[in-house]
Image (cartoon, rainbow, N blue to C red; front, top):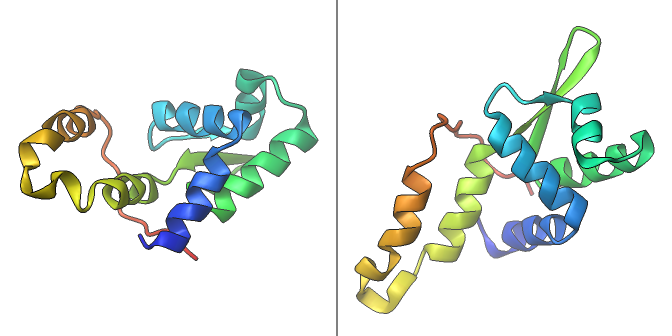
Length: 120
């Protein structure tokens, strides 16, 4: 992930509803959630939900797929990992032990992240 992609991701995450949506989709795992279930969970109207999902998808933080008559959204784990890696890339001025808590927290994730890349 480069700086431009990171700025786009942070801009998308800087809004409360969108941050809640990403955290919700991360918790949902690779199976994702239907748009209606997301709307209910974050208490958003259809038009508001659509706007926020579009912003998150444009930033590469989530992805969508059609399943029957529903649109299912899921976290883009590769992009989210890339964002964390961007922040930690030059970590600790040669003292990697300082980063151990952050790495341990990421390693505790029980899901199997995919490897898609952030688009620009």
